[in-house]
Amino acid sequence: MKKIISGLLIFSLLAIISCTTNEKVTEEKYSGFLNDYSNLRPDPIDADTLAYVTPEINWKKYNNAIIDKVTIITPEGQEKNDGALLLAVTDKYRELISEQVAKEFNLVDKAALDTIRVQPAITSISISHDDKGFYQYLPIGMVVTGAARTSGLSKENVRVITEIKVIDSVSGQVLAKAIDLKAGKEMQNKESEVVLSDVEPVLEQWAQRLFNVLSGLKHQE
Image (cartoon, rainbow, N blue to C red; front, side, top):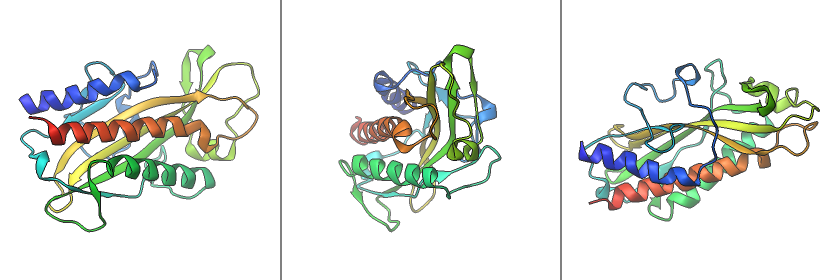
């Protein structure tokens, strides 16, 4: 129990660097990537983040890390990796995660006893119109083509959902997992399509948070 609490507190300490979304990740937004969502719990400070850290794990033994390619899953539950925006998002997210994780772990490409495997996914990219009081969750395909962008005066933000697993590279045991919804910066050019710069601030936050969580777990007493 002590290790579960300490793991959740590590997530909660990171909440102060996150953007406010005013939206929780509810069950209908689960993609299935994490397989089991039943043990996820709201972060004590940032309720938008649902997380779980497996108890009684000796994190100190892990010195290496494999960073998997980022999976993008459409609202229909199908994996999707084509499209210029999706490729840009997946490449940038993996690059940012690799840069952060490399501060604490040696990056490798083969499973070993002392190696974790980080498996990230993007499960939603959407646009919100804040003056309407609700979110318009749009199929990723619509966002990629720009069909979702309007020319009205309402404030618009890109919102992105990530699901991420950290597993033992040999046994496949899930060591930690989380799902989170965050908002990017306000769109400036509402008549153009969504671009990487609309999403990148969120990706940077998640990569930084992941590093802090893994480092905190590795060095906890």
